[in-house]
Image (cartoon, rainbow, N blue to C red; front, top):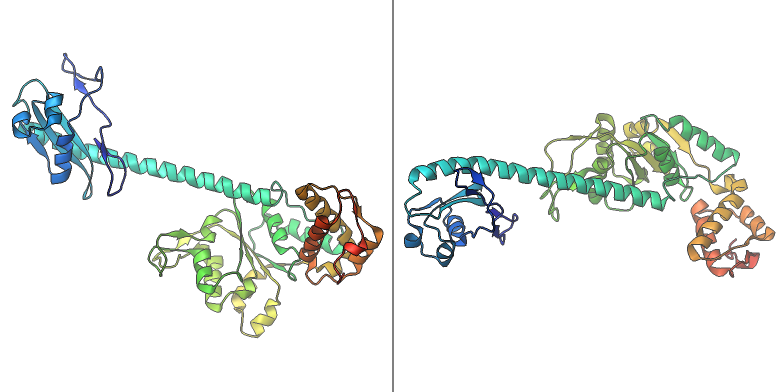
Length: 401
């Protein structure tokens, strides 16, 4: 009889019965064997082995009478201080057939059975956990690929400035060096980071992105490095950090310039040593993560102002890639606009004839302070406004354009 789960309200369930055949050898029963619940319940309640040489006389329960049990033994299966099951032996021929010597023998068997059951359950839990992690990994990669259009990261741009960027990406894609992507807000830094990942040998592992300016310093440390249960108020269970989740893959740290000096020292250690220490942990964990960082500020100026660690700056600055703002790559504006037009028209179930010539010229002369992100939002708004099958005309553009 085994406990069905690790909980206070767990029940004990008969899981296996064997009988002694006429030849004295063990055999599977021909039909169901009635198990006397009063026996294993007494063992569990009293947390002790049980010997009843004359079971009907000594115990007298209805389940013993109904099962025609004449003498019985019951011993607990232990895992530490917990009873995980009961091994029960009955004789249904005559009373007095089971003796203290039989109890000693059954206790020895129970000691081995306890170890076997505990190990089997650990293996089962580990197998389930491994399968769950595998499924989560597949789900996360699938979600990321769907978000990026089937996992193919396409960078739109034929201008000289973007060709230089793509050449740099190709040079560094399969190296282990840290890459720093510099550029204004909305220039597509995360897209370039994703291209570095999906074009590399790490593409089968996770690409994980974190905006360092989006959450507070304390939460960011826990988010990146993980934490142990009880390490701070609200830490009710162990949590893996993004470094550990991205192990074998790529971790993109956007707006790394917004991190505090104390967190920067921990990032530097992770980069130098290839290991992390979760909040509240006493030992470090090795991780194999390719770091791609991004900033919309001049890190060199921040170093001179004492707002960014110089040693971390040089560590991140191994291979810098500068993304040009949209006003420096105006030839790409029609390509990007038509790309977003086709994308959002498909999403909204519309057909769009394209941009009128004057509308395209206005888009190309605008300064685009929000860069590609602003253009993307503008085109999405335009698709909502145009009639099915219609052209984007100047009157539909935002007033500032």
